[in-house]
Structures are given as structure tokens and as C-alpha cells.
Image (cartoon, rainbow, N blue to C red; front, top):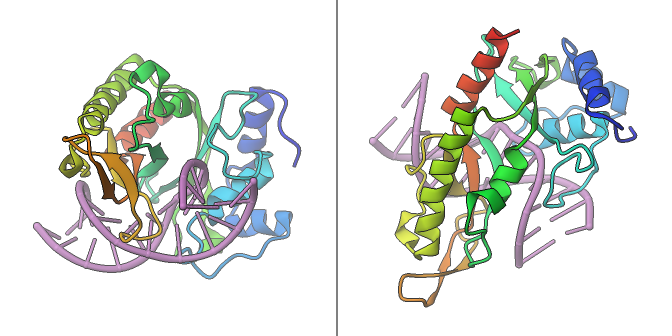
Length: 220
DNA sequence: GTGTGATCATCT
DNA sequence: AGATGATCACAC
């Protein structure tokens, strides 16, 4: 599908999908539904990207750069509560990460997100697409994200390799992001020496997206 | 080899 | 059950 020209057009496309199953959408796109997601973890996201006209590929930018919108599918239970954390972007550990929140990648990606809930079901093909939510962080949400990011960024900038664990951050956290724990990347440690560590990514905690979605649905 | 799409698997 | 750490496929 061609890229939407306006945010309104993108939203209209997403709204037209509400209530449809993944099986239906896959058939529209001429794709087979995998038996489960174990070996196809990104399948739902890729399916929605294709249908909504996101630029295919894995470039490090928003899905709809001309609209300033990032697309995220969000797995939810039958009550509409998110059941998984949400990957945001890689955390550069090699010293290339921005020094300020205003300049960082996380803020850019989360500045505007089109959330598409996917309601769980026993069979993948029967999962239903929920009503989309076009979101911008509220001042409170942004303040929390910023505080978490600054805390994490400080640990990285100080080279505290042992602080790269997931407990830090109430809304935003750091977690492994690699093919396996054996994969290594470089980071400057406290002594300024290059050390090898497992790559990390920024993730939104489930509690954060749960509150976000709940607040948004209550306001409709 | 890196980043995006994420969910899986294990431990507490 | 929820959180943390581990992992899978694909594009470029």
C-alpha cells in the first residue's frame, strides 16, 4: 500500500481495520499466517506496516517520517491490557548516544505513536485488531520518560557496565537486544577502557503502556 | 554486522 | 503472574 499522505489518512486506514482478524488481514495482503510467533516474532508488526503503507525496512527512523509518526502494535489481553513490553530503539553504548533528552532517539521515536492493540486469541489467525490510538506523551508521561532516560544515560556515560540491568527506570528500561547473550558490542568502562558487553535496547514497561492505553480509552 | 519487527523462556 | 534476561527472522 502506498504511504498515507496525511495523519488523518493513516488514522482512517487503521480505524478501518478495527475488529478485523489477523487471518483476514493476512489474506488481504496475500500472506500466510505462521502457526505461532515463536519463529516469527515480528510478523504482526510487519503485516500492519505493509497494510498501512509504512516504508518497509529497518531504518533507524520513524515508520512514517513525513508524518512524524511511529507505528507500534501492542499485544493486549481480552480486557485490553497490554501483556508485553514495547521495544523502542537500540541503546548506543559506544559513546555515540545523545547527551540530552531533547536530542535523543527515544524522545524522537515516542513523540508521536500510532498504537494498534492486538487482542489475544488461542490461534494467531483469530487475534483481532483493536481500535487504534494516536498518542503523544502527556507532560507527566514525558517527564517520567525523561527522568528514566537521564538515569540510564548517566550510567552509560559513566561507563557503569554493571548498571545495564532492567531494574532501572519506572517507565523506560534497558534490556538485552541481540540475537543471543553471546553477542557482544563495545562500551567504554569506568576506567575509559573498551569493554565488551551484550547489546541493549530501550523498552517501555508494560505498566506504562497499560496506563497509557487505559487513560486513552477512558477519554473516548 | 546493525537496527527494526517484537515475543519467548526462565526465575523469582 | 510479573519482571528480567534471552532469543528469532528479516531488511539493508
